[in-house]
Structures are given as C-alpha cells and as structure tokens.
Image 1 (cartoon, rainbow, N blue to C red):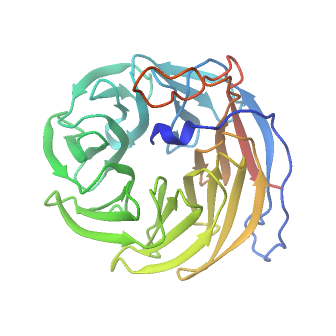
Image 2: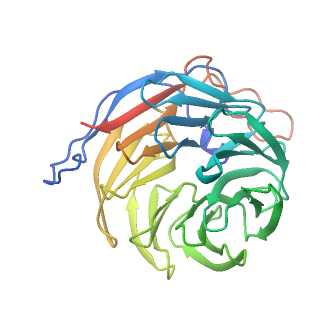
Amino acid sequence: MTTRNHVGLWACGVLLAAASAQPDGSPLPAPDYTVARSWRVGGSAGWDFMTVEGSGARLFITRDDHVDVIETLSGRPAGSIPRTIGVHGVAFAPGLKRGFTSNGRTNTVSVFELDSLRVIQEVPISGMAPDSILYEPQHAYIITGNRDSTDLSVLDAGTLRMVSTVPLPAPPESMATDRAGHIYVNIDSAPGKLVLVDAKTLTVKAKWPLKDCANPTGLAIDVEGHRTFSVCANQILAVTDSVSGKAIARVVIGRGPDGVAYDPDLGMLFIANGIDGTLTVIRQDSPDDYRVLATVTTQVSARTVALDPATHRLYLAAAQFGPRPAPAADQPPPRPNVIPDTFVVLVAQPK
C-alpha cells in the first residue's frame, strides 16, 4: 500500500476498549471484539501488509527491508526473511510450499521456502514498484500490482518465469481472487475504480467505477456471495457485485482506513482506521445489507489488518512516530520515523 497512509500517523499507547453489540444467538463468537493483547516486536522499520499463512500458525509482517515472522500462538519471533528491499506484501503457494514477497525498490519478487523461510531466488519482474502481491491458484500465478508502471506482472509460481504484463488504467492497490480465475484490482484514482482481470487470457475484462469512493486501498472478497469490499480514503466501504460490477452498498467507516478483512463464517467485515486508531466492525446481514456493529479502539497508526478465519482473531500493527524530518528541496514531505522499539502487533478477538 502507498506511503500516503503513513503520513500523520504517530502517537499514543494502546487503549484496550471496545463497543458492545447484542449477541445474535449464533454458536459462533458474538460480534463483540476487544484488543486482548499486545506483542512488542520492536525495530525502527515501517510496515505495510500483514498476512496469516493458511495454517494460522504464523503471521508475516513486511518491514521495509525484511519480513518479520511471528508465532500466532505465543507472539514470539518465528524467523525473518532478509533483503526484501522496499517490501510491501507476501503471498503463499501452499501446494508448492513456497512464499513470495513484492520488493518495491528493487522491482523483484523474493521466493522462499515456507517451512524454513530460506530465500530460494530473487526474480526480476516486468513492472516498476511492485506493491500488492497475489497467488492465483487456478493457473499457479504470482501477480504483483506495480504502481510506477501502472500494470500487473504475472509470474509462473513453479518455473519462476515471467508470463505476461497486464496494463491498467492507473496505479493498482490491493488485489483479490475468487479462486475461479478472476482477479479483482482496486485502482488508485478519484473516483476509484475496480478492475476485473481474466486469469486465463490475462486481459482486463471490465473496469467498474466505484461511485463516491476516493483512492481505494484495501480489498476483500466474499466468494460465495459474489461481493467485493473496497476501502476508500474518504471514509467509505464500497460493496460491489463481483459479477456485474453493480454498486451494492456504501458504509461509513473511520479516518485513515487502509486494510480490510472479511470473515465468511461470521459474515463480518473489519476495517482498520489508522488516523482514528479504531477498527470498524460491520455485519453482513445479507449480500446486499450491511450495518456497523461496533467501533473498537485500537491504536493510532494501526491501519493494516490480517485475519485468521479459523480462530476469528485479527492482527493489527502499530507504532509511535517521532517528528517529521525536514523535506529536501523540491521533494514531497517525508513520512515521520518510527520511534525505535515501539512497533507492536495488537491481537483483537471476540470477547
């Protein structure tokens, strides 16, 4: 995700509080979440995407020039993936027992063994400034969303050869797949767009406007209900029919939203709002109906979120920031620096 989401996100300790909602009688956890614990990870690097591997045992956090790997049972370090310069995202190909990182400053993808975290190879890609990364299982593709070249790079996850480059109308943000050969891409524009890419032909199949949605970042998908969920910078969650592109709903969320997670078992959405330091909890009553159940206090700067669907736990990253450095001549203002050893992972879960 882009660096604009870092600006102005500093300060504050963790506030452990949550807004309550009435239980719905389901045997699944009630939609009443709280920040239950905080794991101090430390370091002075920034961060971007967080990803829980399929087993739920480890959390992968991208940290500028490396990836921190954390045990989800204990919060202890489980290892690190080094030399991932400008890393943004991590994707997994479980059948190949491989993981992949998008390295934004070297225009490469690092390939590592899932078991040992050992880096096998660093592969140059066709695009510039890879940000988001996705594994498409139907064709065993690794796909990066490249902001500076406004395209997708498609890599064969087995042979590690470049397959294609897919042009896009503007810089891409997060991606999602329905596991049936369709790839959805948020397009960073105002108003925003949602692009549908056919993984079989590797061509853009549709470009859908996201009405009332400015500069969408995070993207999640309800595969069974055929809905996508785009997080918009102007405090909107945009719900779209993933078949027709029809706008279904708009839900007001917090300030500085970025990451979103969808829990299909609970029928709930979670949006991390970094400026407010909150987590918006939304109930999906049906594929067409949505309501905010709670606004959970997290920590200012907690803007990315990862879900473990088996335990319904959520992981958010946050830190405290120092003063913003003085800008160089004719350069945009730099983002503030992380105060060393204030970086933490917050664990939110049902009460």
